[in-house]
Amino acid sequence: MKIPSHAVQVRLLYVSRSNGPQTTTVTSSILMQAQAHNRAQGITGVLCQGQGYFLQVLEGERSRVNALYQRICGDARHKDVELLRYEDISERLYDPWSMALVRLSAQDPMVKVGHPEFDPYAASGDQVMHLLSALIASSQVIQAPTP
Ligand SMILES: Cc1cc2nc3c(=O)[nH]c(=O)nc-3n(C[C@H](O)[C@H](O)[C@H](O)COP(=O)(O)O)c2cc1C
Image (cartoon, rainbow, N blue to C red; front, side, top):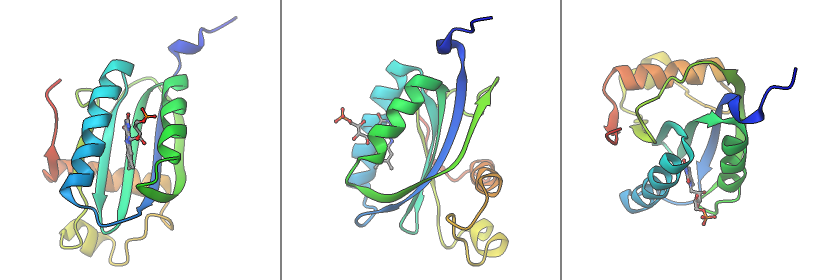
């Protein structure tokens, strides 16, 4: 049976290193692009930044998520983009957010205690997904656009 490709939804998680200081100007410009574009494409997710890292989850139709990921990979504002997890999904985790911003702070007890030498490149995709959920649950969401 032929399943229409537009019906397939995926979740993608990657990590990257920022190419410069993670200033609010850089973050705001990324978020503005993300929120405008993602909304139009039906893509939702979370962008987590801090300690020189970006961690991002993208959820949506597979072909759209793949196209966005390719564009993001070519963005000069970061480097060493590494795919941590990619899966088919039947439900989204971050439905109301076209792109929420979560802070990854070295001072955060979650990062310090739970992960004293936190290195997302060494962590499993599961561990990073858990960290993101924990950060969101502990109100580290600093910008969540209204649906
Ligand atoms: C860490 C990071 C995350 C990004 N996330 C998104 C995103 O979720 N959606 C988006 O449209 N652009 C995102 N961008 C920006 C894209 O890489 C790209 O600059 C933007 O989509 C504009 O592409 P265009 O100039 O080809 O239209 C992100 C960039 C970086 C560095």
